[in-house]
Length: 394
Image 1 (cartoon, rainbow, N blue to C red):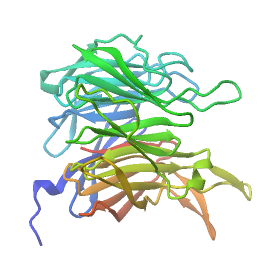
Image 2: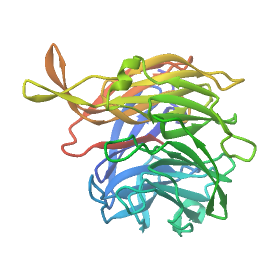
Image 3: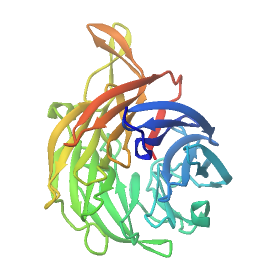
Image 4: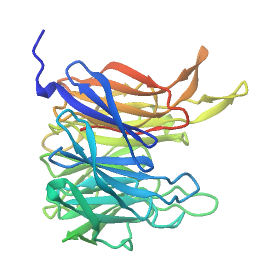
């Protein structure tokens, strides 16, 4: 048997309600072993590591559908060599439910995105927090929550140099009560922790971005359209802002007919550490009534895999990998680019000749040398009324 190396081992963290569970992940064998868990002040919303991988920042909130909640915070943890987490200090209070957090490459600033700034329907905002003690502590927000981040900002990411913060503004579909809130990408100048709008790229009706990822070496960003089920490619200009226009647009779906499903939505997106491929999650969880019970109505729960042209950034579809679960909300790739883990947020009953339950689960895939995914194994969970809301390899 080949000797195991540090490259073969990493940590996976997965949130179930207020708990953040730590797993040891064997990259070579695509195996997970549960180690321990920490408890947050409220339900985990999003997690991001410091660039040193010695600290982990966890956003939590008690907001539930229809209620704004009262407990919103950022908690800092020290990451031990074996991946175990130890809380440092007391959580930093947040004004609203944080939908996403991120850290710049220098490890100096943390940005939190809020999909609404106090109103149940209104523009969201972003706040920046200075990171001190080499990553071990966060200071109170530097920016004001009056920064208008658009209607339903879903993610914020720093440009490679940290001079700009790029915000995915998902927008909202039109309803009988109001027109569509358009989707866009907003770029904010960041000057000593203060944000000012630098540019905005507007999308056509029906498109609304959820997440983006940035090529590790080229000036390209890849954006998943939750509204519209598309992958869009943009160029970053020399200053780090998003250049006008879209370089390429691709469908994320294997079957375009699924775009008509109300609950067929593009989800997370990640660029391979080598920049060679882009991965986008498609998620569906809609139900129909069948013999008096709710049954999964169908749709795509898969990872769309695209090969990237190294000269132009153009993505070419090479695979749709079935994730073997319902609603893959989050997924991640280890730092060596060999293991991909998918977190399914919920369970459903589905009919396949007979009705069977599809539980909440983690699915593990090997990333092959050509970028395609090979299913390795799946871990099923009974989470009760909780959801497997966030997962990530760190």
